[in-house]
Length: 514
Ligand code: ATP
Image (cartoon, rainbow, N blue to C red; front, top):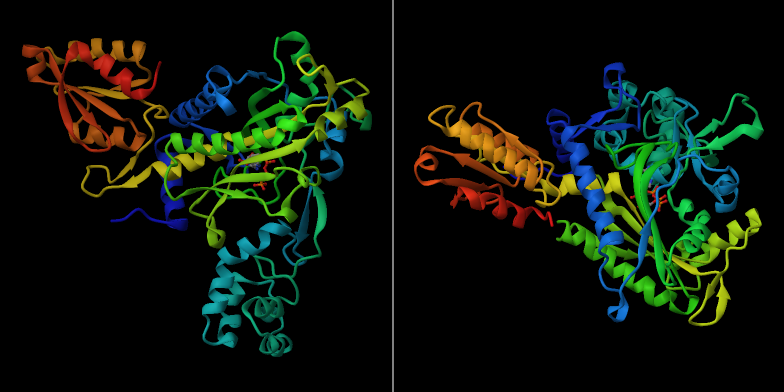
């Protein structure tokens, strides 16, 4: 049995995540709410570990900069609701709009740039192209799968138009009488703008004056606090400000599990530099961020870095080093093969200029070394925490039919939600006492552990494999006489005997706690 791919892999993964308590649909007992997800006991640990690793490699212990220079980054934590003018300055109020198309038949909304991918996955499109006889298809499967399709609603008038089409896209358009709806086959409207920000009101009165927005990104907090940070700390250019937190986007087509949600978490860094050094730092962050994702286990062919084409670049990045994305081959990445995990952008001094203009506050920085006053330029590595978590889950999911549990999660030990399982082989003969003491020591000195005395040892291994626990320690008859235990490695299944008082150092060395 091989590791499944595509939608089969996603089905297995979603099922395992629910069964083992990684991820649940939000408010599931009420039927769920589209685009919102809750993290269960294992998922919350895994997410925190990913977040903490990022924070550690940004704020506490960043790698050396270009030419071996020490890097300085400070972390902040901003509110989800801020002054509404922030979003005017950032451009989100005017421009944070995706072109949308509505189906004239079923009234569903789609992001125009998602329609081609959705059509590729659509059940009715697959069945339409597989049909040997369109009349029979329209009367039977077409009626069920694509009730909005012109060909289904009015066969005689539509069939001749299909005959004139020269390629597959043309056949679909002819069958729908316009851009086809991926859900029902109806025809879509022209793309129209749609603002993705969630709105709310601050205070008792619900008028335009009181209107506020849930932040659609965490980045702006770093810009409108730039002066506060410079004035209250000893940071000097070049330096970074970063934060991790929740963002909200009223995504029109939330899909692919937690990949595109309406509430999600981001990990963003704004790195402020002198304009002359921007390209140097852009290259540095491009390489550093790619390596970071590799280090946590996305090392192989599923990860790549893609430089944006010139016509993809935001206007402020046109004359610079540019923009790139770290991309992962998610099971649903389709024909393109890869989708965005993190964007690294050279943003010039666009954001600080905007905030200076809209707020009227002076945001220039005085550079003592250069004796120069200027608005710093910015390199922004912007990553998705929850999207990164999905990449980690996809990468870790492994099938091994020779094991009691054919599904196991091969997390990097530092990310694993549970670091070790501790088992007394049998629940008597002095074994539980030793196991309980070891369990307490591991929890205190290594990290989260699980005590399990139920069922066969094979079943206990299986439970830990599914949770992605890298090590299992078993206390057996020999322990009582010679003070040694077995430690089993999740990935190889190999067992070694280790002296009891060496278990904690052995685990500490391997699970990344410093
Ligand atoms: P996309 O093109 O996928 O909508 P974006 O380019 O708008 O993403 P950014 O604004 O650059 O995304 O946000 C930075 C990161 O935040 C993305 O690389 C992604 O990992 C994450 N992200 C953005 N939107 C979502 C979402 N709806 N759900 C989960 N993660 C998201």
